[in-house]
Length: 210
Image 1 (tube, rainbow, N blue to C red):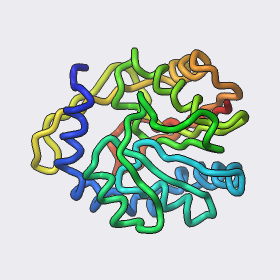
Image 2: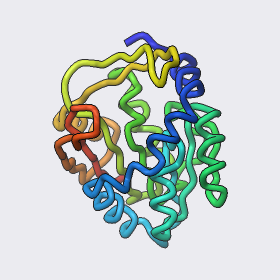
Image 3: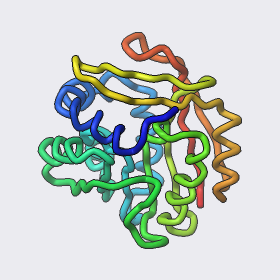
Image 4: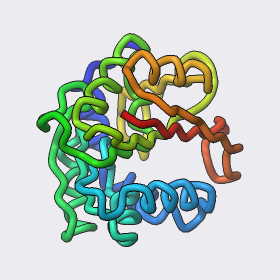
């Protein structure tokens, strides 16, 4: 994997509108994901502010907001932030980098991140998780999703646009090791098969506490 954060940002900027058109309503077809998010919402609702990292067009934040969660979001791509803000005018979205979160310590009751950590190299993952843990309050809850498997994938074209996007595939045990190394406790991972309309990788959902 060689793509830098600037290449990833530029790639998502180029496809932001097409991505939003395809994925903003995706949860309507994903009952497993809705169930996972419902459980997370019940745990963090009324506990304080929650942040989504790698928000894309804001479909996860929208779902949680509609279930009473005090949610905000960040994304590396300014164009994704613009799309999310346009689609969800009642939610605050800003540009940000998960490796250098611009938030104070112990700020959030929860952090949620769907398919964002997959764009990091393996040697960056624990650093990102430590940043997520840093901004969580004591006993705060982390929910993240990722693609299961081994190795990496690369994409150089998407929606007719040139991109440079790498995806790190991780096993259940590998992610548990990263979470423990970052200082999380009570880490558990759920897994499901891909839906017929998804890229054919296993989908994993990790839940852990600070």
